[in-house]
Amino acid sequence: MDITLTQKERLLLEDQKSHEQICIEKYTNYANQAQDPQLKQIFNLQAQDERTHLDSINQLLSGTIPQMGQQQNQNSSQNMANQNSAPTMNTTQVNTANVSDADMCKDLLMTEKYVSGTYDTTIFEFRDTRVRDVLNHIQKEEQKHGETIFQYMESKGLYNPQ
Image (tube, rainbow, N blue to C red; front, side, top):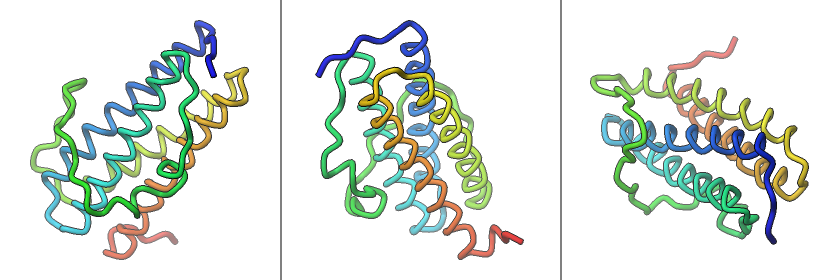
């Protein structure tokens, strides 16, 4: 299942790739700093999801449609509880020193909102329905990441939606 990307499609995927790399770095760094073990686990699991997203983007950039198999169709943030995170990527410098659990959650919720929005634009710019489906799947998982953070924050009294 090979695809040919336009210049615009390639540039949009490169943007999404950089977003995924930053998400991986943030989640990994924050998992190492979080005080609450539950939050550490959430961050580690979501970092793993972001690595899967990055792999999918890299496959698209190489002209291949990724297989959206059973592992990706399940919410791996809930199903991969025993996996450890990989080392931090050195793609950007994200300063995460001395940040509270609440501030990490706020930052990552804002990040997920932004990344989900950029996927929305990217999806509409693609000609190939198969690519749109892959990107839509990733966007839905980004929204789930935001939901998980929101639910954690709400349960700890860190977010009061009124």
